[in-house]
Image (cartoon, rainbow, N blue to C red; front, top):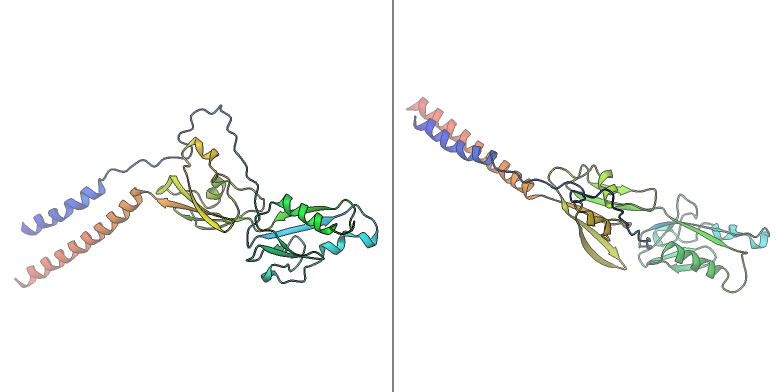
Length: 264
């Protein structure tokens, strides 16, 4: 009887832990009630960062061989690891080095960090015709070849999300990462962003309609998104650990009682 009472006594904490109340996890846009309202979402223009890979193509209206734009679309003399390019085409691109520079054919080193695509295009056109009219009506087309963000924490699968376009919202990034699990905080998602060499950490509530006005709704290249676990997740981990310890203790008690009954 004493052994049975002991088993019951140790079973009570297990029962109480398993019956613990759980908190409701907020859903995406839970606070958005008026579906007829029009929400304007600001779309920030991307700025070039270190380690970005850029596709740059120069075009001209000139048909004269001596004024051809082909000379400005040759592979750079520099290496990709030092801010040059292993090719000026769509595949290789121009890598922005640790100093924020690229080396462009027939122009030389350009400091591009912090510039938008339009600003860099204007700079290249200005450099081309800086002394004489080298090209007639030159145009410069620039694309990002390395738009990616990293999603970590309580999502379906952590890792780097590569994007073929040049726009990505936080909802799209989390969707590509498998969504937030049942134990992830939707109302406290962190975004780590580096701008002009400075690191900032922002918070966005994915359950609120105000998330569209957040500067972190539209992600920038190289952003890191972190989804932290809820208190329920932490409690569940603690409960699992406690139950494992109780189970181990019960097995020890059972084994001890069994041996005692054999040798008494």
